[in-house]
Image (cartoon, rainbow, N blue to C red; front, side, top):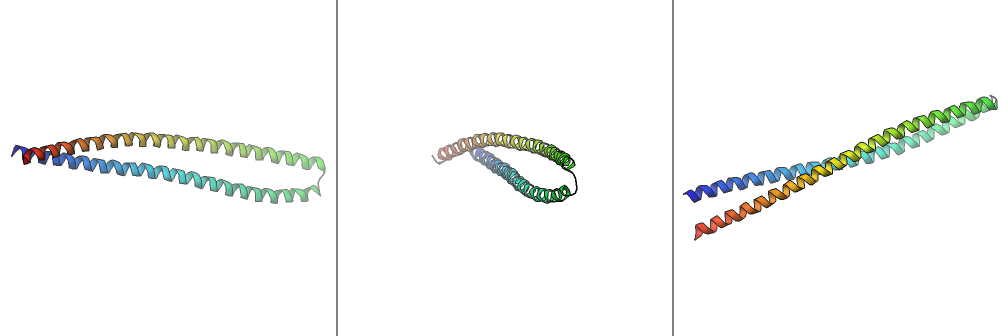
Amino acid sequence: MLASFRIISFSESLNKIDDQEQKQRGEKLGVAAQIDTLEAALQQQKVDSLTKEKNLSTQQKATNEYVSKIRAYENEKKIKNEHLKFQQDKESRLTEELERDRNQLNHVFYNIKRLAEEKAQEDENLQIVQTLVADLKLAVDELRAQQHQ
């Protein structure tokens, strides 16, 4: 009867460990999904950036055509001053955009690193749980063998 209670206890422990293992596998899949989501977001941001660059190029071309029409009506010095100011503003905007993009990229790299560390920890925890499950299964098998003798 005592052996029966022990087997029931071991069986319950084994079930708990199996549940924990399933939970950790689910969490691992969640972390992998988050990584995939972040990578997809990064890829989408790259596509958006290319689209914005194309739009900017189109807008720049239209602006340059307009500036060409203005040159016909204004003197050379005024046109050169306006062009210089335009280029400085563009450089300033691009510099700010580049800085924002760098900060965002650093943030993404930080998140990826953090997620990789969490995944490594979860993998380690999973390995520990799997080892514990294997040990408990061996103990249950030994108890069963002792009962049959």
